Length: 260
Image 1 (cartoon, rainbow, N blue to C red):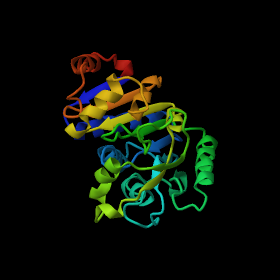
Image 2: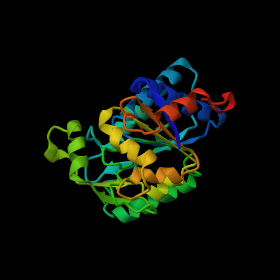
Image 3: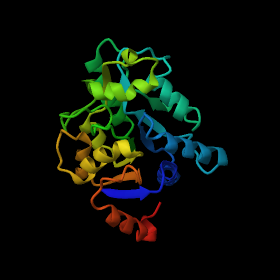
């Protein structure tokens, strides 16, 4: 994986947005994979600024969200359908018809997962998948011991994940227990991956994903097997990386034609 360490979370967002803007400039009908949570918010804010400045045209961009809670109303402010609309679709001026979120309200969740997989394939696959990482190493809602071959399906959230997400709800009891999430196999099908993380609370997970063994106990470690995976972190999230100095050196000496 390419590991890029930036001084702050804001700078992580700015750099990631430059990479995405460059992609969309080269391919105006790009298909983006969208993550929720706090990690990618700086990216979306920076992309929105590019749209306002006229340096990014997203009119032909399509997007697929990673996951959705099961059973939560679509209009609930913390449903991922609402979050994606509020944080991405509206500020980035995306066509709502081109933005899809897994149907966590479906009566038949297995069928909903299959339909989502079919929709991604019909769109030509994801060009760039944005990812965050949980403190336990999950990506999407693929909790530890998730199959590396898994596809979009229902998952039970760990108590740690529910506790981490409780800050978005009025009380911990309101956090859903289940979700519909793209699988690790689905994520790995994307042509490029961009994982972002900020803060010391993510340092252990980042180190396990980047430098640890590839194991289902740290689902994000499967990214080591992707041919085009970039990890962008701030200094706090990089604190446990053994080769942090090497990653800084590598990025500082990156050839001009590889820069973004």
